[in-house]
Each structure stands twice: as structure tokens, then as C-alpha cells.
Image (cartoon, rainbow, N blue to C red; front, side, top):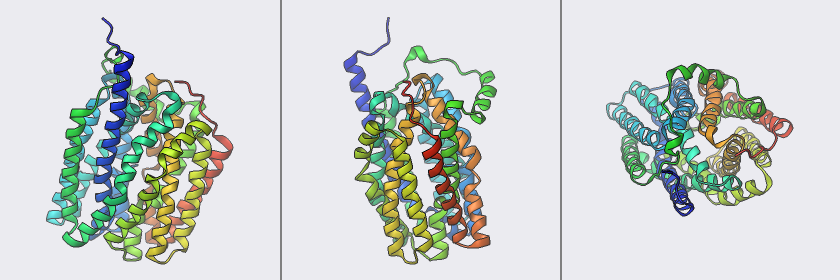
Length: 408
């Protein structure tokens, strides 16, 4: 008996999954923006230095070494065992991470943040899986729109959640924000358990074999020749922004004494401009291609980084972060559509994970490097490193990265 869904059921399931992933993006965005706006000031408040803050980001941050290790593993396993179990696992790990952060805030001991960032890094096992569910729930000529829709939830939450997090931290302390973040993560886990539909058909599932892992590791460090220019460009991009943008809020807190509320307002300004543009940008990516929007995003980022070097007041940084939102809005759908349209559907999750692992493996030390540059050269050190890298990436995208072949 065939296990295939009827066209009507497949369409209904795909639409429901896109809405569910968009809701997950919104709820995760609330948690990430609430906590993210105050995270770096919180770490410094608990007694860590800038270099130690960078080290924590290098271990379990978005591009940390733990996250990096999980990306190819998540893609490889989900291509064999299904998508949904790894989304649920990430929810459990995320709740445990936030609970650990809350404990660290309660006893006022920054060292307890270390197991928390490791747990948070482990949640990256679902990152390629969620991207793959999004890609599998849209046709190949609508990938940009699909990723814009699911990313818009994060952007919308970012309009209010960072400012709210900063306000709550100013009024009630960092612990209150961490506890709310844990509660939101628990709600997200429950929603995914109820509403998300599996997208990998039973006949495509196999039993993962440990003997395949060495080959997986070799593939991580040897990207496909036809994707190599893209891999190199976006990896340099991640390292560059890791040295500066990834620790910007800690830098501003240390250098200019910005409060959690001010940092939250900056993050909200970025998300506000991101929230109003993704659907339009996604449609334009589908019509005009990915590479022009990747270049546009990087060019906007260069302007913003120059502004960081020249700015001296909160108002200046607020305006620059609003402009930075346009860079994010153009990068995300173009980046995801490029990779989704460059590999066959049966290899998509593994390729997304492999790209993330390749980038993370080479760029995970960047926040720590940025912290060391601050210790040596002050605010301008990590920001200049970010600027040089962003300029180089703009040139690489323009000269060496071509549009995908839409092989799916």
C-alpha cells in the first residue's frame, strides 16, 4: 500500500507546516530576543570579562563549536530518521539551557553559564532540520517566499521582545528575564509536539550506521566543488561578524555603558525594519535570483559597520541598528534559497547541516578573537576586523558566486 499523501492532503500538510514553523519562529524569537538583548550585559554583570564572554559565545553561541558539531549530525540523522523528533529534542535541550541560565542568575555565579551554553549549543541539532522542513513545504520556485514567511515570525517578535527584555531587566533584574525565557521555550516545545507534521516519508527512512560517520566528517571539511565559492564566502562572512557584531552588545555595555533597555531598543529597531520587508524581498529573490540580494545585504552591512566606528551616541547606534535590519532581511531568504535550490531534496538537510558545520568549524573562535581584540585595541579593534571581512565578502560574492542550478 502506498504511503504517499493525496495532492490535497500534501498541500494542506505543507501549508500547515509553514504556519507551524512560522509560529515556532515567532515564539523562539520572543525567547531569543528577550534573553539575547540582556545576555551579554548579564554575563558581564555576573563577573565575566569581555574575553570570557567571547569564549562563552565561541563554545555555545550561534556559531559556537558545540553548535557546529550538531549541525551536520542533525542533518545526517534527520535525512534517515525523520524531521520532527529532532525539533522536539531541541526544545527539551533549550528549556534545560534556559533553566540553567536562570540558576546561574539566582546564585550569581557566571561559571554555571558554561553548562547552559553547552546545552544551548546542542539545540543546533534542529537548525538544518527546521530549514529542511521549510524547503520541503514549498516548491522550488517559491523557496525565497517560504523562508521569508517563516523568518518573519522571528522578525515580528523582535519588534517588541528585546525592548521588553531590557525593560524587565532594568526593573526586575536579569533573573526575571531568564525565567520568562524558560517558560516561553516550554510553550514552544508543546506547540511543536502538537502541531508539526513529519515531512520525511516512511519509505525514505533508514537506520543510521556509525560506520557512515567518518565519511560524514570528511564531507564536512571538503565542500562540493560546485558549491565551494559560496562556502568560502559565507564562512568568511560568519567569522567577520563573529569578531564584531556577535559581541556588539557586550562592547556597547562595556565601552559606553548602554543599559539593557537601550540595547533592547536597538534590537527592536533592527527587527522592525526586518519585519516589514521579508515577504517583498522573498518574492524578489524568487524572481531576480539570490546573489544580487546577498551582495546588497553585505553592502548595507559595510555601511552600518563604518557607522559603528563613527557613532558616539545611543541615537546613532539606534538608527544604525534599524538599517542593519535591512541587511538581515535581504540576507536570510537569499542565503537559504541559494542552498535549498543547489542540492537534491534527498540531500538537503545534510547539505544545510554540512554548510553550517563548515562555517562554524572555521569561525567558532571569532567571538573570542573579538574579545581579545577589545582587550588589546579597545572598541575599534573587533569592529575594524568585522569591516575588513564584510568588504572582502562583498567582493567574493560579486566575482565568484553564481546563481544555483535549481536541481530540486
